[in-house]
Length: 392
Ligand code: CMC
Image (tube, rainbow, N blue to C red; front, side, top):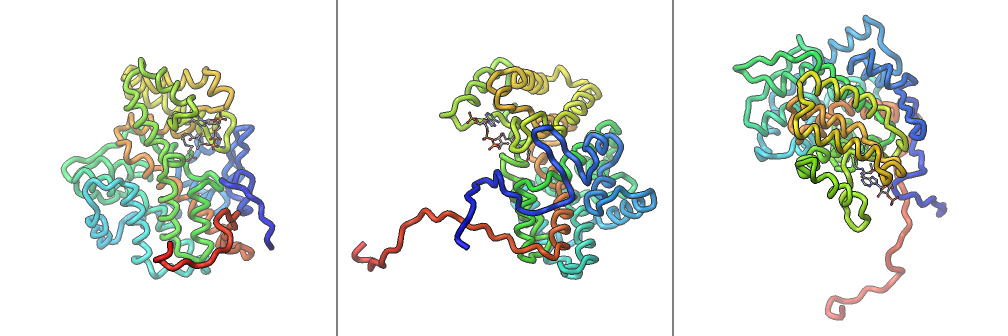
């Protein structure tokens, strides 16, 4: 009692024990359930990886089929949820809509709210993994004033999302297999990342016994910030602001200037002080997509690649080990696929839902888990006596 460790930003605090994801930031290693991310990104699809995160083992063929069918079965939203969408302003940010709509699912699925029951937790986790993509795609459709597109189960998970984003009732959408694969890879790379801000938020919210839809809505809120999931959107906004290769120098100068709050978005990471392994994989995918679409000479992509080159060579960035992070490249890939900047973080959220529900379930299954309750160092006034209002 009374002895605390002061650790703002939790730089040296392990908030839980977990057997889901392993990161070694110095070595640049990332494993899900022991499997290196490179092997999973190369050999699996997102649902297989989600199964691994949620259940601890890779599925065999029968388990994979049954899991894929269950997820497909839950992709529809309750029709009344469309009323929740319609309560938002037309131009609401997709993340604002997602925080609201995902939270509102608490009011729709009372049948599986017993967080102490493993079966109930599993149904909620499956519902979230299936429905968050539909919510994300519909938040975009709502923005641009197009009708909501219902999920189509003949597509795989990535293709289905692209269909819900890009098809209209008058025009079907045939996903380009290279782009669908690239998109699926973005999802795999973002599926989990141990105790980052949003996952810690989900755990903290869940530690009180709150329902999973409310907990995931809290995670989405935390993810939204530009220092976390908002970085991919912020990267593209920054590239648009820079506008031309000739202005890069000016922005690099600002990024180095400690009196200027500007930071180069898409560079640096709290944990990786080496190249983020996800960034290395995404970099390769990024070049494949730019080749496939013939975009290497597009001014925006030229600008991004030039910025990457400068940051990899400049003494300031090299000495601080500020490498381009996964969101630098995933932002470029999504831009090339025609996905608007405002949807990038929403897509991150749908991928991270796999990790969030796995981490939440791990915590809820732990008989020793306690309510999260950090302490503080109080820096306010010492005891003083009340002063009546006319004497203040
Ligand atoms: N541009 C310029 N300087 C930077 C940047 C940057 N992007 N990132 C860090 N620095 C400098 C920082 O000023 C400090 O310099 P000095 O030692 O001279 O004071 C040094 O590098 C160490 O930085 P830090 O602030 O101690 O690092 P942190 O661990 O607190 O912050 C970060 C990590 C990711 C918030 C930060 O690098 C950043 O703001 N990056 C840009 C935003 C971004 O891309 N975020 C996405 C992270 S990956 C996705 C995710 O996990 O959600």
